[in-house]
Image (cartoon, rainbow, N blue to C red):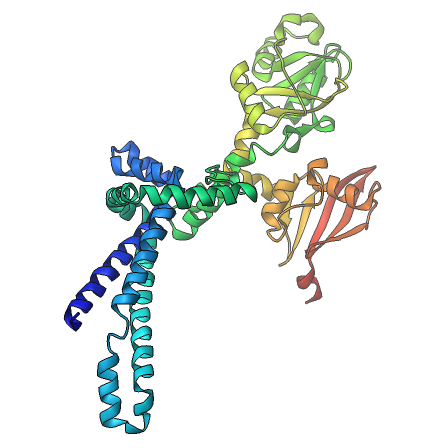
Length: 437
């Protein structure tokens, strides 16, 4: 066989191997989400690519059969292809190596063919396929389906053997296509780094998923901070509460906060006060709304949002398992958690940055909000057992914290600076390396 024919055959074999390498990487790397978008736009080839991915065993078997067959043929065709020329050169110019000229020629032929196939039949096409796997896979899918049909008998043999081995070792036969929260977060982070997703959008997406993991108790107005009215309350007391606590709605109770009757809107009280119609609530039983939304403290924020939608209300009382009031939550509280820029306004009230590397934090601040500021902390220990940073201190100290109590965690020092009775009012958090400097 002449050298010219052998070179042509090697180029043809290299092209086939290049096609197989591009097919393998592009079909394996094509992302399901992008393929689905292409299918929705009417791209039939994208649908064929997804079908191949679901039965990837046949595809990979066909690729391996083709790649190995081509490589063996290339080795045969390229065997000693430049050996005569190398031998002639050595004999003419390096006579001292004449006895080794055949070995050197065969070795250089092997190195040349191997290098050409590594560079142009493997490395270059694989890197090309990684650039746009979805687009390339939809172009080469039809030839690959044709190849699979040609080698179907061999696929049955080799793939069947591989399936038996997989079953023996308990290895799944197909790839799982389950998309987790972590996958979505990773895509959003990548989009933010690439500039596709803006900072506010990134924060909003993270907050949406946070609604599924945060309990209502993490953002509620706690029991001791709820302002409520009783049926025996004087008009002067009602006026003072409304003036000093400009809320839209107030709980109405019989005696204490656990004897709830309903709620009343301040807009319904004020006109009556101005016209002198009110003399305590006991004379206006019909003024308050008895259809109060009551939810358990075991709901997530997402579930609470569903309850608000079902009840067509924006105000709810939270009870614990003993039927006692533990807090109050409004639709606005949930929206504040969802909207990143509004959340930061709330954080500014609860978390005050002092000098570089230290923060003054309100004890009732949810741990989820603290993690947004103390970015080095990804997770607090057993954080599902408490909601606030005060709860974290109680968990770590295993006691009711006293003033000056200190906890070291990760790269931060948490110090209690103010206690009201048994309640932690404020903490001073200092980054350790900043403290040492």
